[in-house]
Every structure is written in structure tokens, then in C-alpha cells.
Image 1 (cartoon, rainbow, N blue to C red):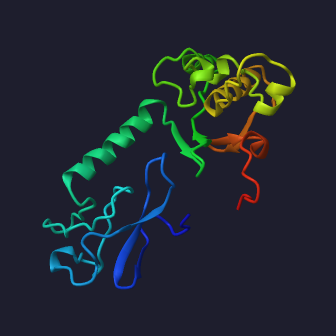
Image 2: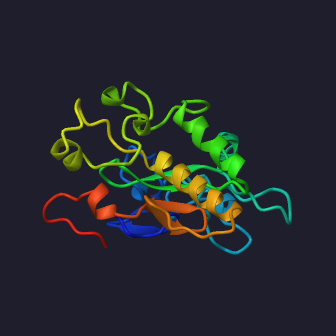
Image 3: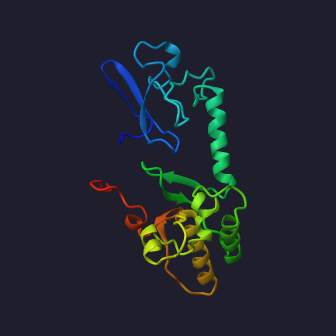
Length: 227
């Protein structure tokens, strides 16, 4: 996996590349060949700062032509990239600002999910996800009857525990979104009662949450360690 930041350009044997963010089903932050290449490009790609600019669409490797309007910088290489980026922002805010992050093994390891301000709001958000209202749970699978695994595994047990405790039936998985919303409700419940409590399943800062026992919930293959 590349560790350069998105938008970073580099040259290999005369060919220029840029680090781009791909969709969650691919390895993140991969290098793609720039088209057009920075060397020998026309003046229309040289901006007022004397540099070439990569498209603001984080999944596009193309360079951006210089804006024809003085004082109004051009951010996207084409209208399509502008529209698709705006659509992604809309989709992220449509569901309360939720966004998901996946590891190289395509496992959900972090979720950006704001906590409601009231117990009632937190419970409503939790039940909406649990009941399958709105967007389909991304962790739904055949073993969970294509519903959120939380319906069958409300305590977020691991597959190993599931088998050891003879829960019955195939392991339905565990949903980080379900666990986050459940912890959100717990915190709101205690806050309205004038008390404090710890989160049971998730931890994080601000709006970004991950499994509290991440090494247990998302074990890595033998010989691989977390950075």
C-alpha cells in the first residue's frame, strides 16, 4: 500500500503518477498514471501559482486546466468530477453525515457518525438502522438474513465466541454502525439522567468511531501488524 498523501505526484522512469483515493472495495491511496503528464504540457495547465493542479475529485488523477476567470480558481478537470464530488458530499450528509472507512481486507474499521443531542434522537437513529430504514446496512449478509447483524448479534460477539458459546446457527457477523449507535444511545440515556458512563463497544474521538477491542474484532493475518 502507498503511504503518500492523496494528490502527491511523483516520477518513475520519465512517467508521472499521482496518489488517488479509490472506492472502498479497492486498496486506498493507490497510484495512477497522470493524464496529461506534467512534462511538456501546454500553458493552459499552468496555474497562476506556476504549478499544475490535480483534480479535487480525490478519485481522479487528471490535471486541471487553468481557469479562464481571473480570481476564480478552477478545482475540477471537468463538469463530471464537479458533479460527482458534490453528490458524494450530499450522500454523506443525507444520513446524518455518516461515512465509512474500510481496511485493505475490505472490513469496516471506522465510521464517522454524529451522536444525537437527545436520548430520543439517539434511540430513533439506533432503531432506524436496526429496522433497516433508510440505507441498507453495509454489513448485511446471508448469515444475517441480509439484515443488520446486530439483530442477531446485539452484543457484538466475535465469531470465535459465537462458536464457543454454541449460539446456534452460522455466525451473522458484527456491525460497527449498530454498535456505535447503541453506544450513542447509552451515553445520551445516562447524560439525561445526570450521570456518566463508558461506551461498551466503541471508542474514538469526535465523530469518528472504531471498535474498542479492535484487535479482537478485526484480527489481522499472521505476520501482519498494525502501524
